[in-house]
Image (cartoon, rainbow, N blue to C red):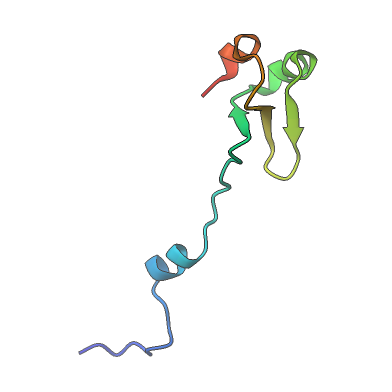
Length: 71
């Protein structure tokens, strides 16, 4: 017998309704930049997203400059 209130959600149901993972925007590519290399990434033109705490580049950027940080 299910004693659950019909208005209550299980954890799995709740997670389906709310996404906690940031989804990358289609116009940008997130980079994996170690903290020690942040100045190099910035000098190469990578941008910092303070909200997501990630380095990224525009999707039309020259990938060669960022190859070592591509996921």
